[in-house]
Image (tube, rainbow, N blue to C red; front, side, top):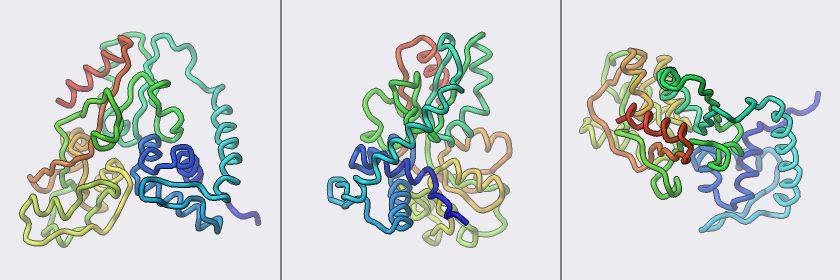
Length: 280
């Protein structure tokens, strides 16, 4: 039996890091956390049995093995991208392209996007998720919703909010937080220890499950798998609908968040104004 290929996202993280020679820049392009990109690269190195990068204090340098692999990976990804061209959405007139993470699409846009469309007859929307990170660029998308700290997201981006870290679960808790399964997103500055200090709970809380996005943490909580520390911006609709409940009133400010960048086209500006009013 032939050996299965490594996951596609390992190759995409490698290719982005090789172009930027910087994990932070690669993570920003891919819409992932720095930790997730590093884990993908390390997993690929272990699978291939070679070192692809030399880690330095201010970035990366690609090794000979990395240089050998890069052209083949780049060509394969380009072929995959070209293969999807036949499935594009057609003429660009009355088409608004929005590049964002799966988390924002699922938890913020999906519950509300019909309201925006009802106000703009004839407009079509294309959501570009981070499955194809080459599409996650301002040169292609009319609107971007980026995740990161203010210094990471680039010029011309405005933070969406209010947005704080809140603790949510499927149902009210039947015991103290320290007895629950706690879910935390890796690659961010604030987590359960900082939240527990803010909430003045008797014991510092430590997570049992780690994920790479606030959206996945929220999804686990909705399915009854534990208590998620997640973005209040994403959780708002789920709390209102009763899919999850906020189990403690404490809310923690975080350096990272979601930032909006919109082009000058009328539909892009209209969407930006609508989204800011929605979350404000």
